[in-house]
Image 1 (tube, rainbow, N blue to C red):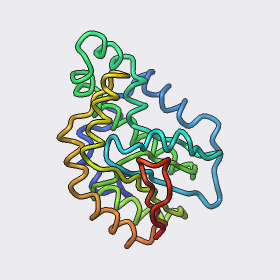
Image 2 (image 1 turned 90 degrees about the vertical axis):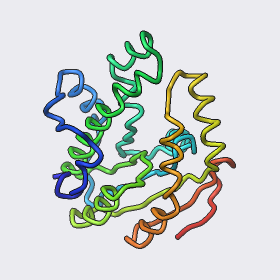
Image 3 (image 1 turned 45 degrees about the vertical axis):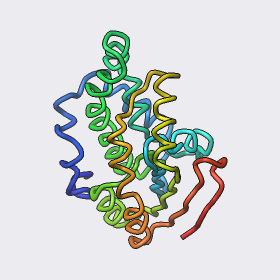
Length: 213
């Protein structure tokens, strides 16, 4: 189903889920979906922002009942191989080896969640055409859509990411942060034009609401 909703998905992942399916990946997916119930009026809420903006903190402090909270970073750090590489080779190599695998697993989680009409809180930058396709096409499946943008200065986000690396040993390349930041304002307008409920939050001030669109 997800390939129909996101025709450009192959630009985000380099392999099919079946090619890396294991007992571990199935257990990760099952744990993500466990206990969720289908909704007659399901919602896809995407929490967007550049790495270091505060998306994870926002999501963890604003969790919604009966919503899947989908974080690709959390999937990555839950993988045994990632943790082994982290200890043996360090955060940069661990990220390089497992970021894509976690991405593939994450989209499989999303696929199954949509198939079951689960409410979804998706932590993702959303700064790509495939996610715009998703937000446009998922309405055909009866989903309501919303995007909460966590706003943060790029240089501050880079400093936060470096601090996080020192504190919890999780790496995000600076180039990735700058790449996501470059087109961020364009995507805010694009989601608005798709008719999604759009809100902007201050990632430096307790997530105060900056704007509702």
